Each structure stands twice: as C-alpha cells, then as structure tokens.
Image 1 (cartoon, rainbow, N blue to C red):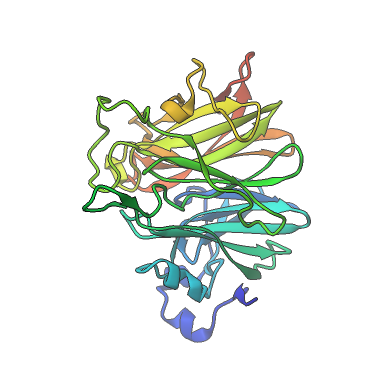
Image 2 (cartoon, rainbow, N blue to C red):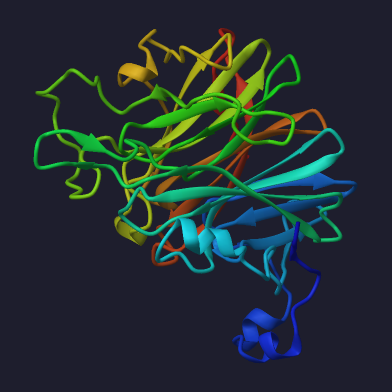
Length: 342
C-alpha cells in the first residue's frame, strides 16, 4: 500500500502555496470546520475539513499551532475514480486509536450529490504524520427516481464518518448526511465494513407525509440531519447529530441534538423517549446570535478524566467565520449531557 502523507511537501508544492499556508502560525481562535480531536503523549491534535485535511496541535487546547502541511499530501487515485468531481478538498475526518494504531476516516464528495466515499488511512504515530492508504471503507452511489417510478443508487450519503468502539472492543462506523439519514455498520479488524448499513436516525417520521418542510433543498428535501458522533458514557451510547444547514456563514442555522441507547446499534431515544429513527432528538446546542450564529458538526471525548465537547461555530462577531468551540460536559442526575460554560 502507498504512503499517502509525509511530514513535508516538495519545494515545488510549497512554492505554489500562498505564504500564509507555508508557515506554521499560532492562534487562540482557530478557524476550523468539522473538527475532531486526539491526544498523543502531551500533545493535542485537531483534524478538520481542508485541502488534504487541515491539522493543528496544542499543548493546552488554548493556543493552537496551525501546521502548513496537510495530513494527505497525495490523494489516492481511487478517490477520484469513485467520486467524479472530487479533487483534494477533503471533508469531515475522524480519528481514533485502536489496537496500537491510529485510524483516520475521511469524506470524498461534492456539494449536493450523494455519490460519495469514505476513505481510510492509518499511522503508528500522529507526531510522525506518516499515513498509509487503507482504501475505501464504504461508498454511496447517486440515488434517483427512474422514469418508471423505481429507484436506483443508495438513499444515504457516505460522508461524515465517526468510529465507535463498543464495550466488547468491536469497531463500528456511523455516518450520513441528509437523504435517509444516519447510517451504522459493524467493522472488521481492518476497519472495513462487516455488515450492511442500517438507518438509526432521521429528521422526521418516514411515513409522515404532512410533516412541515425544513428550509428548502432541491438536493435532499427535509431530512436535514448529518454529522453523527457516538460517545459512550456510564452505560449509555449518546448519539449527537447536527440538524439544519451548515456552510452558509452567518446565514447557517446548524444546531446539535442528542439521544441515547444502551446498545451501540440503538434504538436511540431522546429525553422524551422518542426514537431518533422516527424524528426524535433533544436539542443540545444552538447559536445564541450574540457570540455564535449557529454551531454543529461536533465530537465528544474524555481526556484525562474530563469529558469534552467540541464543534465549529459560525461567529457572530467575525462575519460568520467557522471557528472552534470547546466546552466541558457535565451530566444531569438522570444521565443527560449538558455544556459547562466557563
């Protein structure tokens, strides 16, 4: 298998980049979209949507060093074969350490289409930034209604992956955006699919033909749900999802909802007991219109005994720029997560 990322790019590649992208810089207000986080030794890492996957590091999660080189300096050829129109703007990665190796999933797609793929790379060390191509985990094919009324393709979108390790140390992948909602499948020991995808969350009841429409999308209708992340805490699996629309700057209306289940495969119920498969979900975070217009595409972690929530928010004071949000998580007496704002 080919090595798809190295610690530095060639001089020719560097010369074609804008200067601000060729030098590391530090900031306490990182611009970031679809962030995930990991910790190796005493260093925190953020990976996010960007050309070849954006990356940055920190010792304290306050001051971040934005690195000039992407995770992937070479994009595997299979990605453009599988997803016409995809080049090197890589969306929504996820990273996890499992069985002595770091695994990173990433999304290959184009706006408004569900002909997409989730790729996989692996590494022994985040600090080394040397990643090996592990191929495609799962791909979706454009879904359409044919002239005779039949359908073809996949009614789900293979983007926004999140790895989940269950209590038996078995890996799973959850993903999805719009179409028929959030998908879940078991993985094998190589982090590739070991079962067929099943839907575990939608924005609406599938049989409710009179449900109010969400803001119009000619691509995916009213099922505005995406960016799943499953976090295990005290006997429950908590499924976080993002509702509504990202990627519109100050006009975004992204927000985060949550449900929970005793098993990783669901059903995931909200605080009122409604199944997320039938449109349930308890609102967890939304924009306050003062600091953040909207917020979403989240992740949750336990670092050194503290539960942490991160996402990107569209700043109300910086022209709708997508910036990092992070808050500790506290838990109610009946086991529901809340943000602890400090």
